[in-house]
Amino acid sequence: MGEVVDAGSRVSPEDRLRLHAATVEANKFFHRELSRTKAGWPVNLLREGGFGNALSPAATWRLAYAPDSRSRLTDYLRELGFDRRTLLQAGHSKRTSSGALVDRYRGSLMFVCRNSHMASTGFVAVGNSGELHQATPATPIHRPADVLVGILEQIDLLRQGATPVIVDHPIDAMAIGQLSSSTTRRYVGVPTAGSPLSIVQAQTLARYARCDRVIVMAQTETEGPGPGRGLQTSLSRFFGHVLTDQRPPGNVMSGLARTAADREDLLRILSVATPLRSRRNIVNDEGIHCISPSAVVPGLSL
Image 1: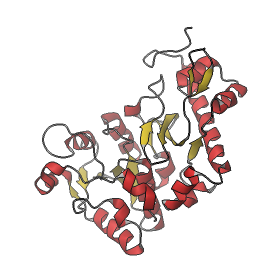
Image 2: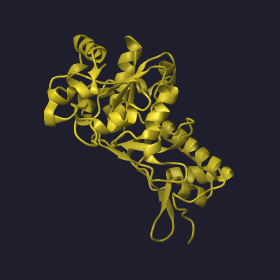
Image 3: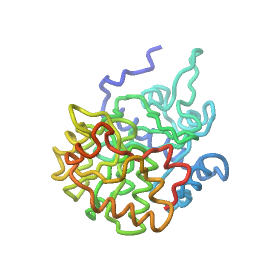
């Protein structure tokens, strides 16, 4: 049929702008869907996790929801004038065996991804049990290893010198940002969204940060000996101080953020973060004690 352009194919500047525009409109659609969802697991997950304010029109994080429908997003974008080729290239729609276009994203909370210029490129998705997955496949404008989640939402804090805190899950990043906004305004949560932080992502983060240090609270694959080596390799190219938290083994963030005293403990832990390399003898083979998405989602309240 010739409608799908390989992710590595070149597209014209005009087509690239069209793909970005379709992604912006998809995000608007998903945001409206969440605002219309008065009940159900997306609302319950956010409220039970302490993120009820994310449902407000004035919320910093513009959360969104992809309804569990066959083609509502596809139909909406087609009505706006986007053609089949654009929807397939952008990754928002897929073809059935009969050739019909249907929605790629269904029944998930959606977090928009942005490139180094803060243009919308695609999405990562969170399911009803908190599981995270890359929703948008590689496309001419979207490479999962080249984009970040949550940077534009926290750009003011970054410009004020807040320290980036690298976490695994977007909801963990929201937790750090919400804690910071209500207290010291010294930290910004940056999720790796399930994969090691790449050189491109580290460079983008450094481009917008006004701080020469970064704190790692994420679990990732390592490169060579020592925990967090891969993250350190990427981040140390752009940040003078790559630090990590000093939580006791097995102590995850959900257990540190439920009460006022717990929140104070979390802020203290962040404030005394130490160089990542120095932890090798402390944790041995256990790696970086990460924030666990499955632990954060059910009971986090900031």
